[in-house]
Amino acid sequence: MTLSMIITLAIIILMVVVIISDKLPFGAPALIAAALLVITNQANVATAFGGFVDKNVIMIMGFLVLMVGLDKTEMIYKTKKALAKFATTGGVKGLILLMLAIMVVGNFVTGTAFYVLVLGIVSTIPNNKKLPTSRIILPAAIATTASGWLPTGVVFFASLAGGLLKTAGITATIDPIKIVYINVIFSVLYLAWVLVGHKLLPANNTNDASEAEVKEEKPFVATLTKTQQNVVYVGYLTVLVSMLFLSKFPGEVGYSIPLVIASVFLIFKAITFKELLSNMFSPLTIMMASVIGVAATMSNTGLSAYIGGQVAGLLGAAPSLMLVVFVFAFLTSIFATFTGASFGSLFVTAPIGIALCVQYGYSAVPLAVACILAAWVNYIMPIDGMPALAFGMGKYKLINFWAFVIPAWIIRIVVICVACVVFFA
Image 1 (cartoon, rainbow, N blue to C red):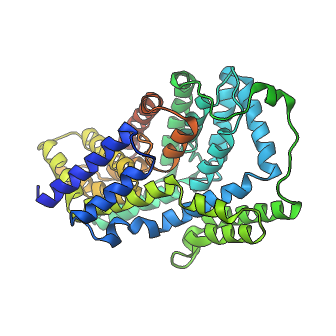
Image 2: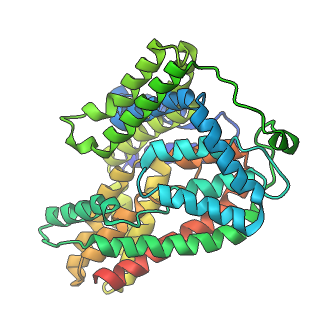
Image 3: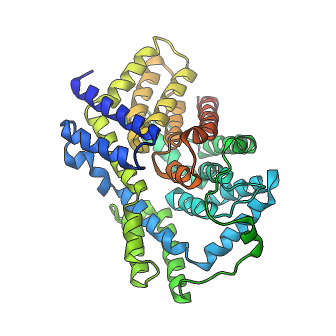
């Protein structure tokens, strides 16, 4: 291990410790870590802070601004009322209906827009004794990832697996239907866990609304004109459609569309300039942008490859295929969680794992698919995207967050690994 690796690792460990301690505002630890990497000469400014011009961060900035406008519309008011009815049903029925509704919609609307929309709606459901909102937010957040029941929703993962294998000189056709099976199995098991695990979450008051206010069913008070609301609807629909065809746009054009639409909202005065700025540069975007620079430095210093190589050495001369798949899926998920970079983590761990499978005489297909699916199981720490939003909206302590999330994460990783070996070996 070189001196650069040691320094980088020390800074990353410090960042994680500070995040866990909750001593600094959300987003600050990663920003400080990026600055420390520059000060210690482990990264230049362009690398450490490159996340602030990352296409995904720019896209998320736009989505967060769009949600401000959407939240002012009558449609969202009615949707919140419908979801609130699920919640006030209470018990098993209300929770199951809500989770199933989220999972079903997730087959058609995915990604950042979906979880931001779901969490934005769920977090504003007034608290009630039957089902406190804080016991809905985190289960709902993970439910946004528990879809993929249609082949069209998993073609991306199948194609990515084929591409990864091709770079290693392996030609393989990945059947999307088998990935659908994996997703359905997890969805069923996750529903079972939600019925038990939601009780471990605290009954926090996540907003100021009361049960009395729910019963009153206050009428919608418009802050936008009908024209402004229609602009918001058309704009948001345009963004959702553009995300479905993101790869069809030339270059990186599609990633800027949310901010372009946000500027249209501003022109029509559906949002204020203050709202635009505060959401573009929210603690969430600061965290995400900073973590990208940290991940890039890990790769550039050779730390990621070094850690992967050490793990490979620990596996010994003849490990089972299941063990190899589990270790590299686990590593991919952990790296993706702490770095916030699913693709970056995947392209560090998967090539090493594929090479090992070839070396041991195993099919590399199960490992490739498992690593790809695990790269997006990145929610065991509230430091990026969906888990960060849920953590803040639910007003959880880290121990509460982990009590629910870690079992769900274990279930998913085990399902992925076992199913990939069974279906693809």
